[in-house]
Length: 529
Image: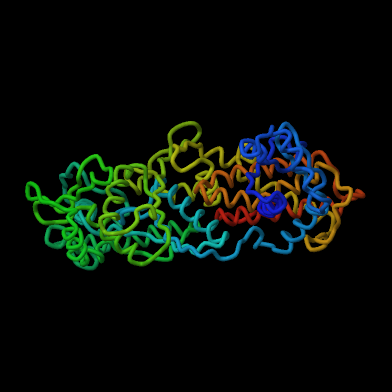
């Protein structure tokens, strides 16, 4: 709707315009300040320019009213145009707001949690954000491939092997164990240790030369736990890339960096000259013992990404990875690629409450709140929705008990109730959505027209949310639309009135908007509450 209006206005005025939505809808559905931008060029007052521009619009079916107000030009859409758009939207069904394929391939990497334990809620926030961005982007025509980078190399794998050994010795062999300062803990490790014992016996827990073997065995089990937890929240990936599998390419990657002078040796360590690209210090890529660092793995991985030839790359990282951004961008430049093609989104931590008190840690996880525990507590739909109600780079705090409320304080209930309410109205009227597709909006009252207009804003909401990587714009829009539906229901009798069929068409459009919108957030709209 907005693009069609904008294109028409630009065609008539023969200039590009910025289209805004007035806060007071009585002023019009759209407005443009184009007269202000033309004032210097034309050497006239914006108010005079606006008056002149209004005269360029001949009678047409798109607008009911066009007027200049203090230099702005306001446009009120006609009933017939809203009716035309409504019919198109209703006939599109679940493809409403779907756009043609775009010539842009995007590689979207997210979650990428170490395969050393189940996902916690911090991982879950990035997972929900990434999956929702992918869903919305694909709906808008972008070619998006989702990827999970499995960190199965380095010190965390050594720690995993040690942790399985400790769990086996204490809980399988019933030994007294002296624990080091850092290790992984949780019931999942006991389950893994029991499987190791069944396959290899007791000696493996005391043989340090076999800790890596235990780590690889445990990694595969943990990765299954992770993928199962993600599936329970409606999240699946196109690709999984193993960090360990990429290290064979380190020699070739290092050779490229050495040849272009981006590496140097100091104190028997190999450094990347990342300060040349804005980093606050150069970074070690190979330790004194010759073992590559975590950064070396990132360099290999991003070389592999760029070698695959995507147009754009998006990484969703935890906020604790903020310091890695410049060093990774530097490495990309040193490898001869354009670091501007890599976009990094940071996902801040989540704090959960229950009854106003901090949510208790999971025994199975050791010292974190598991994603699976929260999904079991409130359901995947509530988890997904609440994680998208704030921008990912801001802290999020919410109370799980709120998500169990059956009122407007629980946003996902409130939105689903609006959708279910519409379905019940159709059932009471003994009509289907298909029955009202061709109904005219002639003489439709303003409240109903406002609801039509709000429901038709979905395409512009999706485009803005995707372009800004801000899914909060969608959750805010859904809650606002649900509020408008409830208000309309409370203020207007529907079934059995002269306006019944018109109102049903309006509500069918609103219901479809909710259904499509929720689906793009990975949530199934509820027809019965």
